[in-house]
Length: 302
Image 1 (cartoon, rainbow, N blue to C red):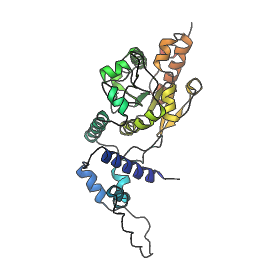
Image 2: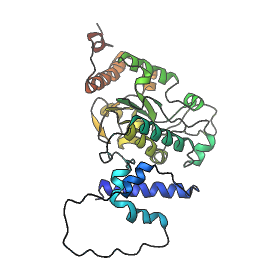
Image 3: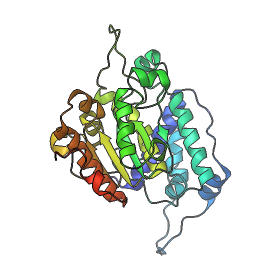
Image 4: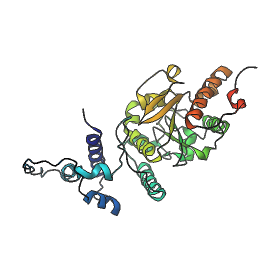
């Protein structure tokens, strides 16, 4: 089974090859990263065996030489996102300036993304994410809708307005949390003048590395998955009615699945609203937030 170290190297190589495929010839590296790459790896065990001369690198691929040349120190120097729900190797937190710079570079990459040609050609805007990059709480939806595509911000339509009310009822402001989607572009709807469609598994798989990097940079204390499609994209599990209300783990972070706000717009029953609120009460407890008696009794019949 590949280790996190091997996965990190493979992710790095894949990213470099993606850049090369899009015509990128040079990659900017900060002086700090170059300095880290130049440092020898600490050895805890001294080998007395005579070292075997390294094999000559294959001449046909300069990119694959990266694996042999910087493999020993890349784990310490580059906190890249790993595939799926695998958390990255522990690294020291970035300074506020470095974190903001890394987030800006990630955003620039996402805004220029052309990995899904049909989505890139039909979108108005890339909907990257919104909120505090120091947030302890992060909400993850499935994909932008028409309003989000128009305004380049996630959850700004009717469902987004309801999500904002939920956040405020928790005692927070929208700017205190971070909100993002698995898919950064609105799924195209050929032949339709209105409406949205569910993103395909392949679309989510292609786009989710951006979300992984967002999560790894923000390092929230709690994740909330909004709706069944988000859960399917994150954990490859279906059945939100059974999954909600129970804690899961994603990239080493506690994750609470709950119903999408759009579901509550379709189903106004107090019992369904209460289910979502019970999920949020668990989130508040996990975050160590104070909960008033009034908050505990929301949506309970007198």
